[in-house]
Image (cartoon, rainbow, N blue to C red; front, side):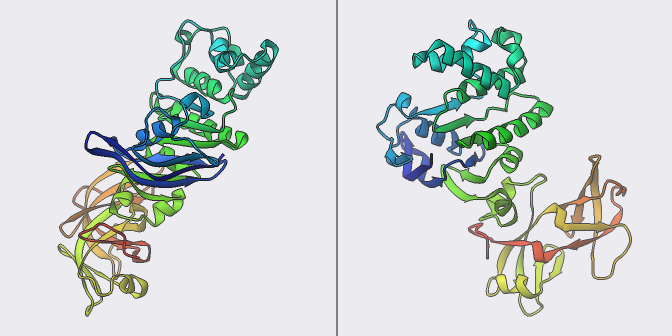
Length: 357
């Protein structure tokens, strides 16, 4: 079922937790609400669930306006960060609970519990109590309880945040496969940009209650709408260099840095003076021997990651980060030569932070 927010605002006292939100989610789409704590993403989810009332605007599930529809009649299923399992019930009883509330026949409940348990590979846990399960197993049970309802929309509020790093990666894959198989519209809240990039069909980046950008993960990564999005999405984050455009010399001039601008790069910033240059670490190349036309810099520190080396560099009076190969080795303060792939760079308005296209 498709979901729409039309000019939705939620006020707490005199503060807007969500402001003028317009968001259209397609049927069967996996959409991630991404942003830092306090940006309004969980409030948005709770308004869709009916746990919070919108101050103004309209919320639709399919063709139905649901602002005044009680939660139990919205036909949504929610998975919480805390799992919210009943400790006195077995796994089978926890999973079956939504069907028992609906007074579903006993044989039908048994059949559907077995099917969902098989799907999530927890059939061997059905007789256990939640206290006998690991964190990952509890998460699967919580998912099973949501899935068994076969709702119109799934809502997930940071469901993986209590898991360790290895299990989080595993469960990300399981969730993505599960949503693909079920084909149910899913709205997922997280502050973890790795989850957003790996899970979502589209990502809605929020800040201060306002939607910053709504697009595919790769479009957000490669064409951020503003400096906040560029900084928040990516690990390590985008490098930023403050400077000005010298149109006559066809240069971007920063603090102790002069970088040639050619073609499209110069066209984009034509007529502007103060701008912010943004470039991803993978578009910064480093060599330990002198290269003609490359910029001179120094190694600040390196971090060996196994599959790659993260290199922190001094370029002029700026510090920037580069991704280098796993075999890159250089001592601190060692001179290096740096090439910025300017055709891949972004420019942002120095005052508003909006991307210059």
